[in-house]
Amino acid sequence: MGLKIYNSLSRQLEDFTPLREGQVSMYSCGPTVYDYIHIGNARTALVTDIIRRYLEYSGYTVKLVQNVTDIDDKIIARAQTLGISSSQLAQSNCEAYFEDTQRLGIQSADVHPKATEHISEMIDLIQTLIDKDAAYVVDGSVYYRVNKFSEYGKLSRRKPEDLLAGARVEVDKRKEDPRDFDMWKAAKPGEPYWESPWGPGRPGWHIECSSMAMKHLGETIDIHAGGEDLLFPHHENEIAQSELATGKPFARYWVHVAFLKIDGRRMGKSERNFIFLRDALDRYPAEAIRHFLISAQYRHPLDYSLESLQKSESALKRLNNCLETLKKYDEDTNETSDDKTTQTLDVSKADISLLSAIENMQAQFTDAMNTDFNTAQAMGAIFSLVSHVNKSIANSNGVSSNTLAKARKTLYETCQVLGIYTENEEDTSNTAEYLNPLLELLLEIRQDARNQKDWDTSDKIRDRLKQLNIEIQDTHEGSTWKFIS
RNA sequence: GGUGGCGUAGCCAAGUGGUAAGGCCGGAGUCUGCAAAACUCCUAUUCGUCGGUUCGAUUCCGACCGCCACCUCCA
Image 1 (cartoon, rainbow, N blue to C red):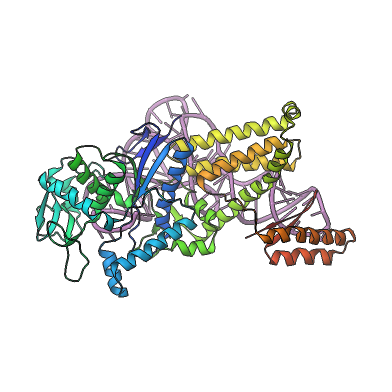
Image 2 (image 1 turned 180 degrees about the vertical axis):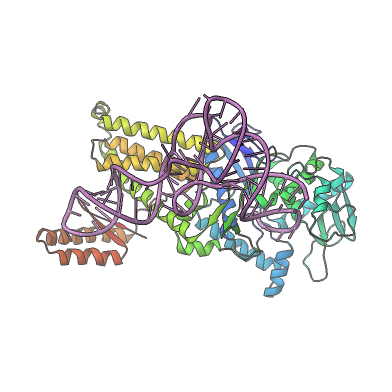
């Protein structure tokens, strides 16, 4: 079964085939940098990240473009309040955005175009639309003539009369049609501006995505992603601008990420009920936040709560414990890998059972992700294998190191797609060099104490080390230590 | 008013026309000096309510109830 994506345009699950074989062009609507991003914003960025990772895992070459809106009304307003320039505010929030998303383990897009660096491209596109009689100039502003585009509304399925009936906003009298939207906004006194054929001003929001997507990815892109709130009017307007200008389909698959909610309501900047991503990152491991954000399929709303984050943290601990335990077998295998003959002969029932569990997991993971990136189901598959591995180890049923190493490899690779496991990087610094022998010494002393049933000393060593974030575990094969967070 | 979505165990969340993945929490055990980790067992005869189609529906259809979102900037 190949990849299927739910396309908002057709409202159906569609087989995915990129325009150019093996290559996927993807555009994701990025942040407007007037503030830090909140967890809800992070959900969309994360889904984009995972879609990209999965496409690459599936063998595609992906070019991902994510824009940064660094000029708009909110930026101007916020900068004025703070008494700094718009560009200063945008600059610092842009840096904060990359810092936050990197902490969440989101990989950079191939291009992060900024609106202010693409003014001339936007002016060209607007001019094209004016030349086609699809736009008109009023008092230094340029409006898109929605009437000119017969397919307007095809994404959001809104009819002109519907749009008027529920209009919650005062109609700008200068517009020919209330649905018309601005592509170029004339600057008011004191506002930042760029020169244009129609006078000083700044670009409208929708035009930037049209022109930047086309510049960096071509006139037709494969996947266009964004939050569900962008479906209308933002994406509808992007389609109108782009398709009227080029006569070609703008995006082939439209992907819309459902909202993150809090207390049952949408988390939104204007609701003032948001949690900054950076604040969450200060409290919870990035992997736990990722786990939480993909614990529901991306088209389903997800409710934020401290409790949910804690659940994710606990679940992740289980996954981590399993993978850390498996590391050992990985190393064992490397040492004995010359001895292939004995290993192939020695395939026990337990091996066969675990081997088939690994295969099942792999298949289930792929099926889940192939069905519109069902991360919730994919994680179910991962945890089923975790369970199976733990059982095999606990029962010491004679599973070979080779098989366990294979389990680790499969778990590791699938977790990498979701970004929910980060290997405890081996401390190659001086600390580890000293720490290893030192801890071995402590464990030895503790073992002596235990042999003499001196539980006070034994427990003291364990307790004090725990305070230093080092956890001791007594197993059948002796005591082990590891860092805990 | 228009458009769309959701309602599955204590909580979170998959899923299917043939009888409910996974995670968290909780309870009882195993192991252990005690921990920790792990394992075993238990925790939805039932999928918002009421009808219909069907041999059979949680899954399809209809009505109703409840919740949410978009139609204004918002991921």
